[in-house]
Image (cartoon, helix red, strand yellow):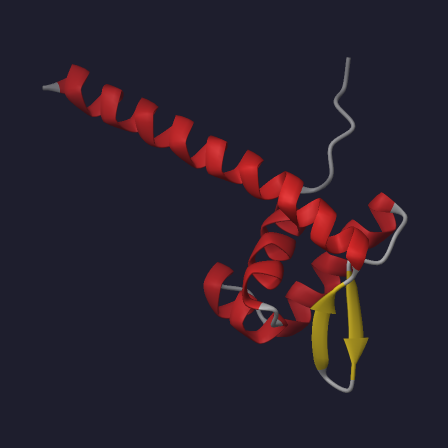
Length: 96
């Protein structure tokens, strides 16, 4: 059965933007343009059906639901990073 997951690039863009409270800083973090970050955030908002950020005069801040979503996915990203690092370390040791 096919998984119904949000686009990973959009999740990465959101995680970076939420961490920095800035689309520009997020763009630097994930090597995309600020415009691409904005596009990915809108894509994720469309997928989820709610607004992640409140946009006001060039500034962005997480909405209440956006803060809740960030809190949940942050732990998933942390786990994915930890698991991947453990496998990379294990793989490098078996090559020696």
